[in-house]
Image (cartoon, rainbow, N blue to C red; front, side):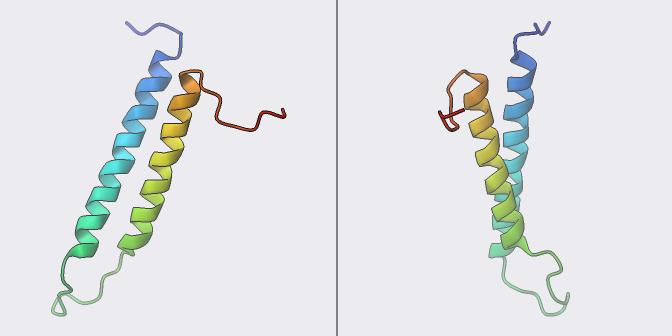
Length: 77
């Protein structure tokens, strides 16, 4: 099935990045809707959800590059 060569880590990393991208799309859609005064104020800050989701996607993509063997950190260590 899955060998112990990091394949499971890559699948988990890419799945996590897809979840983050889904959160960004959902937050962008919810933020773009016009306000509905009859339902009251928005209780979830969708812009912050979008920013946190985008940051998560970026971190997961860098992690995926590291799993592929591409060094993305400082070279002085």
